[in-house]
Image 1: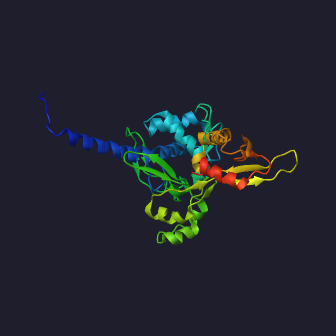
Image 2: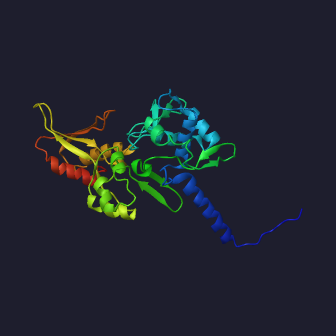
Image 3: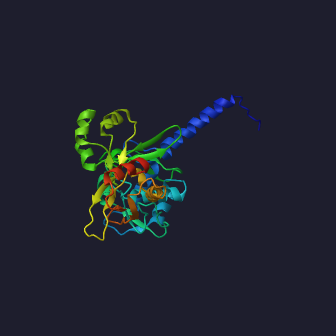
Length: 325
């Protein structure tokens, strides 16, 4: 058998190969499809759950079974990335509308990881079932062969709402990234009109609606951000003053909503930054800081010395910590 040697420029080979690789990362991993707002791994997890019959009125099933079916039939990548996608779709502090109903430890807003997939269980939310998957049998989306051509999978899901806006998206690909904030479901549906202008749209969609709350400070810049697709949103946590009810108690500044970027380890980082302000004598108005957050919501309490200037202290926190981001 004679050898076939192809003579070509090395730079041409590298360019073609890298473009192929980049497109694979962009389309098959990192960035969502605008039609259903889902990345391939998310779409495949939801489709696998439907194929397993995990509807909202059925019992939860082990997450390991869902991950195994997704990996074996549709997504030939690592099980940890598939499970992480499943976990994020369950977390109501990350998603405007959670798509998965989880049972067990699926992590916390403070950055605690989920339990191993052999311990947790999941099924579809009724919302997901009715709005994302209900029309799967009506021939409204195309199907394609899976990686080994033994199964068929949907190219996109027949989602009835603009999921890309409602649940947002974050992804780092090759040469491009996305960071789309979540929005309010009812506002987005009210503004669903292909002919609408940006000004008219913003009468319905006032801005992002983060599951962690918080305030968008630079609202005047939102119109330009929506029109160009790029820009920075300045977010602040929500702080209120609690007057002491007894002489033995102290006045408090209480944080009940945080910037979306503060979830995870950044809550602990915020508390350590406040402690640093006290230790460095940047402020002497804070006596103690404690995290009283629970399943009911965020509650970070700063006890104040008597006659403390609460307004000045609040501005200091915005300036020196991630309470503004």
